[in-house]
Every structure is written in C-alpha cells, then in structure tokens.
Length: 289
Image (cartoon, rainbow, N blue to C red; front, side, top):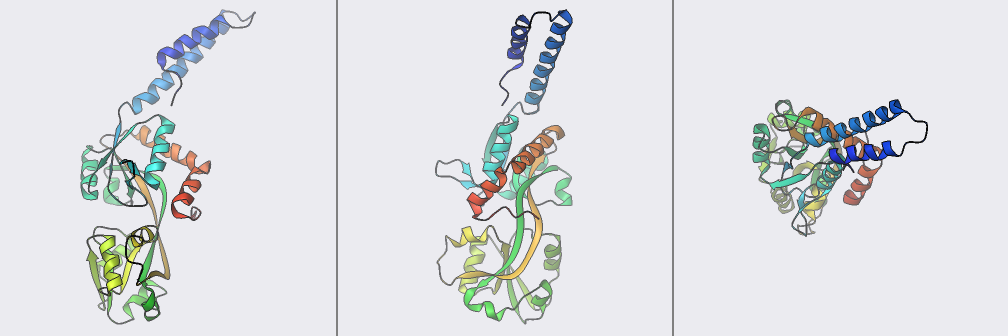
C-alpha cells in the first residue's frame, strides 16, 4: 500500500523544497518538484487500476479454498492471492458460488477473479491467466488391500487388465492427455463419474469402483473426513498436467492490473513466500519442475 496519496505527495514536495541544502538554485528546486509530482502521478495511476474491491468467486475445495473457523475464506490459494493483492494495494471481496456459475459470471464480467483454474482454449477467450503456483499432479488411487491386483505403470496398462471400473469426478479436468483418453477409453474400462471427490473416494472404499483418478493434493484432505479403513493409496504413475491458475475476467479487469498480479505473485515466489506457504499447507517443499 502506498504511504502517500496524491495530495500528501505534493505537500511532501514543498517540505523537501523548503529544506534543500544551501547553494541549490531554482533549477534544483524545479527538478525536485517535478520528481515528486511524477511519483504522485504514479501512485494515483496504480490506485486507478484497482479503485474498487475485486470480486473473487470460490467454493469449498480444501486445502486451496474453504471456510475458515472465523467464517472467512481460507486456504493456500486464498492466502497467496490475499498477499499479492495487499502488495499492489487491491481489496478483495469473496463470493461463494458453485464453480460452474463462477465461470459463467467470469465470462460476463460479473465476477472479477477465480482460483484454481486449469488453462483451456475456451477459457482463454474470456479470462487472463496468472500462475497460481499450484502444480497439478494426477494419480491413480486404489484400496491398499487390492493394490497388487492393479499393476499399472502407464496409462496404456489400464486397457490390458480386464474389466476396470475407473472413477472420475464430474466436471473435473485431468489435463489434455487424460481428458482425451477418457473421451474414448479402451473397451474394458468403465468410467464412473462421481458427483464429487468425497463420494468417489467412498465408492472406492466400498468396492463400487476399482481405481480413481484424482489429484495428489486434494485426496489426503478428503480422506481425512472418511473412515480410516479400508485404507487408500496411490499407484506409481504420476501425470503432471500443468499448474492451476488465478483467472481474471477480461470484461472487468484491465490487462495492466492482471499483469500487476502476475508480477506480485512472481515476487512472492522469488522471495520464498510461496514455498513457505506451500510447506505449511502440504507438508512438502514446493515441487518446482
């Protein structure tokens, strides 16, 4: 946040001019006044980019965003976005909405920003993408007592093991490669789309599906809410499908402001803030490529 407003900067310039060292003539005074006025104009311009609170759509998706004990949004993505906004002097107003509605209102400019979005060509038409420093790693999950029955080392193995009931979560993306594969899976693979991750994990525990595609960073939090037995573990394959992004509506957020957020987040990464926050949420170091 800037320490001086426009008026304060002009007053400060007069204060400096009155206290210039002896021998500094009128030219020196004029240059000092010019410098301070330019600084004031820069502050005013920065404030103009974010002259109102930005609305941020969110829904329960721990550990990235969820309702904290104080009733306000909390989580890795929320905390990181809050720090970036504070760095550039922006205020945020969080609106709890279903993900599908958040995307619709982002397209219309009725919501300014959203979190944890994967980049797609369709979304790039209406949104500016800013790295969210949230790498997405997809794993295959299985009941621990049945892991030996599924010797999967690569995606192609799923078509060679007989009938496989494969769980996914409705509306989720698993990256271009896996999404394309899921559109026309091998004949022996039966895809079961669950309403949400929690229900799919419960199906896995109950034996209603054999395997489940899900991201490495969301499953542990959901499993903590389920019965401990039967235990669920990940099979060896790991698919890095890129990172999740913060997205800003092109209808309501200017390109310079989107760039300001990108620069602020890059600075937080460079200074180690991203790694410290990631460790606090996931108990592992930030997985740089």
